[in-house]
Length: 88
Image (cartoon, rainbow, N blue to C red; front, top):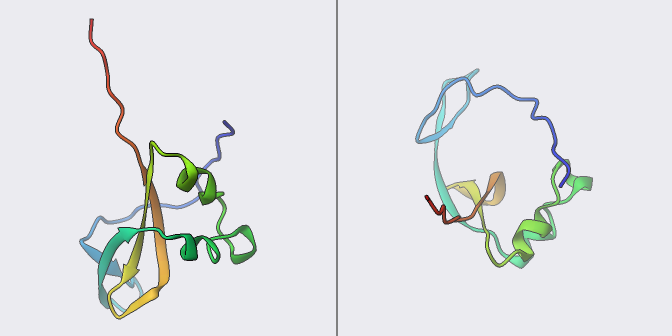
């Protein structure tokens, strides 16, 4: 699997999306990505990762972050999987 460097800085962890210029805070919702979402999550729309790969993997769940008042605009994505670790 090709690894890609990340080029952003996390300056603060919050429970919402925060506009750092205006200080406005937007309540967010986290939900599972749907097949329809995949149509807009593309490199042509400036997404740098092929989320279809993780979506197709039965061992992973892909979640989207949206603003409650704008549920059709995806603000971010995360892919999660549970791995068992065997300790010896």
